[in-house]
Picture 1 (tube, one colour):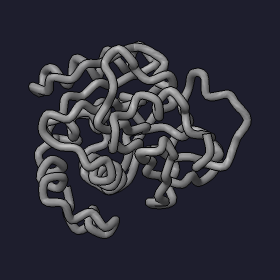
Picture 2 (picture 1 turned 45 degrees about the horizontal axis):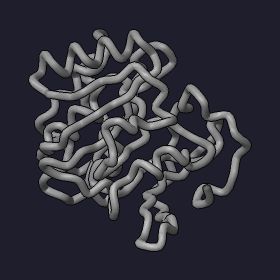
Picture 3 (picture 1 turned 120 degrees about the vertical axis):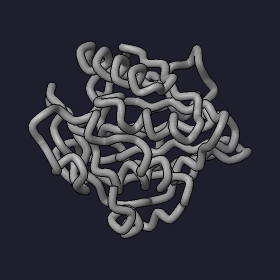
Length: 211
């Protein structure tokens, strides 16, 4: 993985860069893409889903600010690549995937690569409360508002990173944190394009920082 491409996104964290270099992205991509597996662009993985480009994975991972022993929830397992990067950082990873075929494929691949990741075939919009609270939550599909269940499952001082906006256009990648008064703070990280989150994300669109 080209470190220069990742650093263009402003990610210089050596721990994140090392994890990106270690996880074999080509293993998470269907056969037939050859060297495209190592380029900085998303690729289809079937079922209308994609694997994110490495620079975005690095940016989101860095924004979470997690490390060894931290409990992290990923919403949208997809190929399992993002979960593998988090596991490589030493995190205890819980990941949800609503498409059973993708969940099964990712669980098998992660296990075969030696990553101890808990995969749930559930609607990640509601989080995974039985395993919370989480030291970080990452949403790897576009939502048109901040899912309240995810905010509620954040540990004090933890971050939620998610692409917010219209699902048929460019979204904004936000980092959300909850302060000591319970107020949600947001930080605009980048313009991104993600496939939409499937499941119960059907409420009217609201301004991203609002619940």
